[in-house]
Length: 126
Image (tube, rainbow, N blue to C red; front, side, top):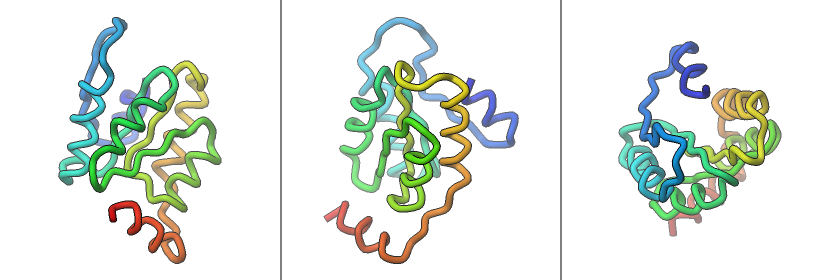
């Protein structure tokens, strides 16, 4: 659903799977997406899981990745504005489909504020 909406809006979408409803080991799918962001192959990534927490933990293990879990518009806006998040994690069990789409739209549209937040972001990779 998210990928379809992004393609319709003109975004290039690279899907890292799973393409199945069966349970999987999420690091097998999240790590390649996060690596693509860390390597500069993808500008941003959106990862999905049950709560979004394990997916964010997996993504954040890579230097240069700033993955935020968002559960509403405001958490998505702040993830970009204050944290320059380049990966968004959404918990499918935590967020309704319409809300997930709104979260993605806000996250994509919100620029990084910079300023006082820039020095904090630099400290993440020390």
